[in-house]
Amino acid sequence: MHTLTQGDRRLVSELFKSSISDAFDKEGLGHLQEDIQHEVDNKKQMVDAFLNPANTTIYFLVAKIDGTVVGTISFAPCDEDIRSCTGNQLDDVGELGSLYVLPSYQGLGVGSRLIKELMAYLGKQGIGQFCLDSGYQRAQAKWLQKFGKPYKVVKDYWGPDSVHMVWLCKVSDYTI
Image (cartoon, rainbow, N blue to C red):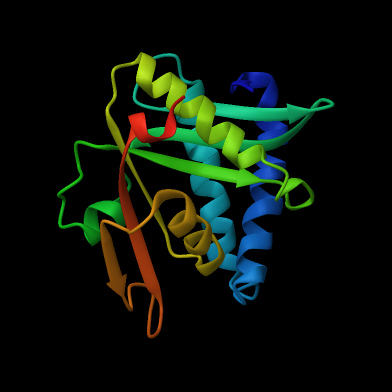
């Protein structure tokens, strides 16, 4: 695990494209190519913002195995979805986001190690809580197990029969 560098940019972009496409496919949404591209572009913009030395509001970690970026995680101000879902109640809480793992490395603990590393960083920074959100059913199932009951559940957020969940967590609950 290490902080994202300029040299990681291309591999991180490839990871976003692969992982986000896979997530959409597994949700039965693979046909939403514009939405996939929008999400990939959004994450690339976040990488660019982090790599700008003047930006201190974003923190980005990558996991590498044999020179390949296999996972990412970030901490940044909460995004529009969280602000919207919570009526701006968590605007002052940073968001754990951009947690993506290459499909071939999922289920091997890469995501858990990234979360653990991020929690250690947040603890050292004196940050006591974080939030995260998901509209993906597969991710929601994992987050329910890992983070427990959501802070907020919004029905029909993305359209009929869709659910968007937001969690508010204490950093100390996820550090050693």
